[in-house]
Amino acid sequence: MCGRYGLTVSKEELEERYEAKWSEGDFTGQEEIFPTADTVVLLPNRKLYRIKWGFTPNFAKRPLINARSETILEKKTFKEPFSKRRCLIPATYFFEWQKVESIEKKEKKRIQMKDLPIFSMAGICERYTNENGESQLTYSILTTEANKQMASIHDRMPVILEPEDEQFYLNLDNDPKEVQALLKPSSRKLEITHVG
Image (tube, rainbow, N blue to C red; front, top):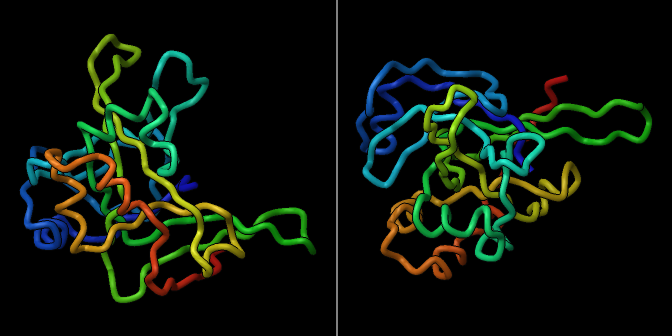
């Protein structure tokens, strides 16, 4: 899964990385992004938006912050957003917690992509009505099986797209089944740091 991540870059670095413009508002890098926070995503119109992390359907007891890529075209909640409302979620690292047998608590790990300072997690968007009765756009991060490096920490990881696949992922004219084929564990080397 992916329960927290960071985006510690400038507004200008994001614009350059994605050749994108901002829809509105300002941006400040965030060292740790939590579920339900408003943060940056890139939509197919090549604009960067701040939207809320976590789908909020009526049946869910808590926001749905992740969606399994393997079943994305089978689950009613995620099928249409994947087909019609995909997005990229920029990140500089993500966090995962590793079970340690010798101690009762888990160790927090920060995971970065070697040679890719800003990477894109695959995401989907959906609109819900918030507690104030206002329409609000939200996003969820797609996950996949862990690669070999991640497997010792957790059995899942976010889908991290190769830069050359990002435009294909965002293009809503593409066949969703072909897009789903991109949703696999990253083969890039990871840099894993213990952060407490």
